[in-house]
Length: 498
Image (cartoon, rainbow, N blue to C red):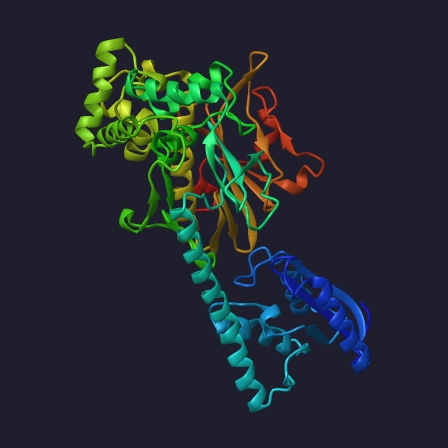
């Protein structure tokens, strides 16, 4: 690393768009002039193009700058920034001050080259800098309010505000004079700032699919998942370069735009905060803003049906629904559950800790479920029990244990991973797959081997990853298990010497 000199400087430039006076090229030119006038040698430039200054999210330039400074890799001792707002428009001005302080604590000064004060730590500089930070944050708040008010007015005039059209619809650009300029393709934008955008009906085949979706939901009582599965099986394109999903179906069945209604302000996500839904009374809605695909009555009927299906089911009612399926069909399968009009498979899994557990509580034979489903359920139970036992044994042995991620721990500074594997049959030979390479990198794998019938724990092994330096995974079989006996333990307690 080069030795830092007093005249070595880095530049930081940021612009949220390239259509503003503070473009990164403009900033670089001004900072180059400043550096030349003050005798600085520019050694590197950190850029954030098209990035908002509200948060650090996505600002790879500033993140890299802070990382280089705090890691000691910086070969400069001053950072030149155009002004305080280029450093950030953080809504909490203390956040902006904190990042500057982190640089100053590492011996790196921050110079705001276009400001009327010198950032020398004097009381006057501190007051002016705090004022500038508050002004930068207030500018974002005022601009947000102005943009929101303009969007509300344009929505009220019948024009949409951002976002994709959705299946069965297309966007069209309209000139300031009210003339239709043409249909906008996906990803295409209007070419004039004065143009406006609204919806129009899409191709006839997509419109027909939208009507089919409503019919399948209302007349055939299919679920969102069932409709998506049918469309995928029929090879119907979703228009999104990926298969249909329950989310896509729900959007078509609930969005006002399919009934010709524009709606704005349904949710709020200002200043990069978490998105939250707004009360319907605050929405900006325009009825009959464009030609509808389905009638308002049909949309409301679909909403009422969705509300009926979302009834609050008690545990007994859910288990009774499983029994009804078994009485009617003589078996219980995942497809039958999802198409029954009752709770979905996911609902049973969340409520009863797995669909297999729900079927057992309903008093039905597990033979109604596939062998693979039962095996997955048993392995989840084994993994859960072994994780609890591992933490108990570590506490009993007074070992320092810390959970790094799912089933990955540090034990007295050593990284271990708990791995429970089922028995497979490759060419009629029972075998088990043990993955050794994992993120984060581990030192040992605690391998819990299931028995051949995958019903209980067969053996526990503490395998050092260093013993297999060139292997991503190993495949112990019934014939090769004796090779791993040197790593075997009868239980986790025995492994900890308890």
